[in-house]
Length: 348
Image (cartoon, rainbow, N blue to C red; front, side, top):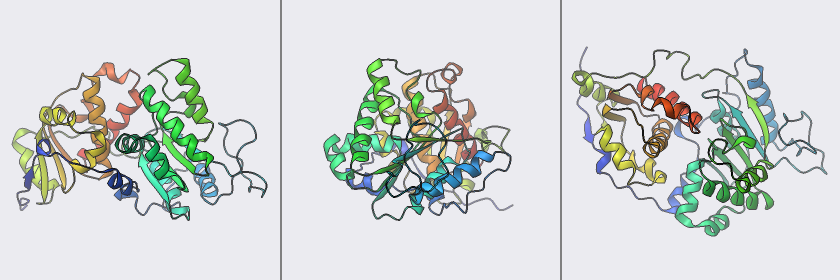
């Protein structure tokens, strides 16, 4: 077999990306792998009927055919057309495990709603927008948006809770509709992170904007990848990176160096950090034991996965990058989602 031509190598740890608020807003569209996602291309698993049921309900939501529930905020949506005198359901919340197609369905909603102003982004991208522009400027900028799609809605601290509660509340009152995904039901957001009653009240207030739709299933990323994340030997690393990048541009960093650099770059700019590369290379991966380092790495993994970049690594296999005690803590679901994406990226 003819070896792949050598890749052009760049180092992410040497990049200092900048991103304005306007650029951040312009980037709020579905990731490349979901640019063409539709309800028709969503393949519901017959073994899990909730997938087809969810698809049909969300099609009606996108068409504006579901009325806001009169009682009970978290029941499964009613299968009836909205009477003219009933308000349209302001938001839907897709709750389910990893890799069951929630993001595909969220993108399908985005593409199906016939609106000029609509946005699609991860939870961290919206909080980063507030951080870059300020709260009131963000409200003013987003007011009038017909639909806001929020992927991986998860509240990690009281500050995010307050900001997102206020922001979404103001937008819903002016007619914006919401669609969100998460691995945690909206009435359990923040569970295991903070218990202050003030924040619990804020979470409950925010959840009243959504009607929950539960999607069951098996992680499609793991169905054929039971062996776990792929790790390369030192001897094979360069050739594997060249092959993964098809002779294009690849990044090559020590794991320790990248993790340290992520602390100096705001997570909102991670997408610009990996711009222009066809593969990501990490040498000497070690198990993370620091929570802050681990959470920054999760945010980085999300950007790599959204960009559909193959990941080549040496050292500890990336499905073992998070310490065992972390997998039993309050961020368990976030780490498990990242592991699922890391496994897929190392086999891409």
